[in-house]
Length: 355
Image 1 (cartoon, one colour):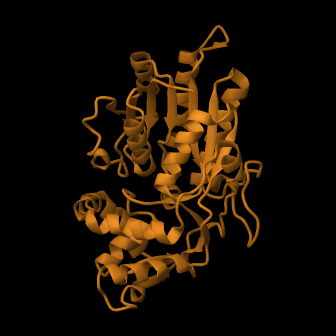
Image 2 (cartoon, helix red, strand yellow):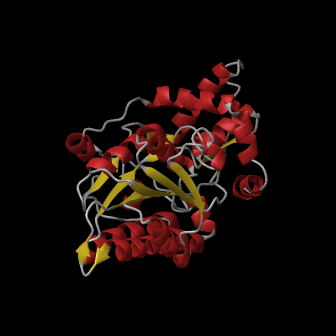
Image 3 (tube, helix red, strand yellow):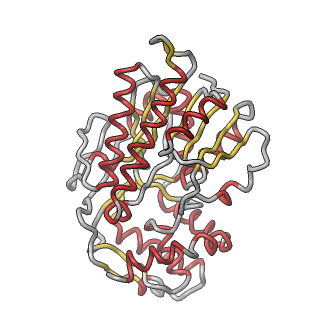
């Protein structure tokens, strides 16, 4: 169903910027409001190519500020919210869980309350409204060597990050069942691609290999993740937003399971070729570090429902997507230099050098 005025929270971040770009370019009749607080991982440079488009607007603000959120809804009267704003790094949640509780839980509730008061009058829901909450497969906990997460898998979060996202998922569905707020929800696997802040495994490794610095790998590198190309995820969000059934949730996965160590070794091989280095040069940088507390062994997501009901499927395999990702980082050194200065270096030293 068409939506004319859409708030996209976290639109300056990694996944959010890809979603904003897709909606601004593909739907010129929509008014897109990028609502982002520009914390360490939010970067307006991610959107330089569309920042002058007439249907794009940026609003700096904090979703934990209820008064600000309420005023924003009153000012622009949105038809929909695509909610991506979140604290998203497990390691940071272990160090500072309260920050995750505030942003991921309280911030989500502020948005839900604003939508509820704007869209529901005298217990009647205005037509053509939608609150779309994007979440993670980490809410499901850890798998063994077999099996997949489905939409019916029970929640079993193991970190402050995943617990905060699980809470926000439950609250979104609670507002649907209690107040009839028109919601849809999706849970995705690990994303990779361009514009990814280099605290996460792939961009961190690319940056370190390029600079001949150690590449930290937790434990023995045996943890398994399903990898989803970020542009495929943005396309899935587009499909779910427009075609998803109200009150339903959809899993989004790339069907690309890799052990961390196998992924890093593949990346090292790609980097050696791209940088014209002797084979094995990058792999020599691999450094095993003390495993993170409560590190989930394996995530694997079943996106059959999304594929069968809404017709979405991933467009490429991991090897192709990884090469495209490496090419982007090597061609955008200025972007990488900007985001790896200042606060990032302090975080990096605390997180890895001490191990």
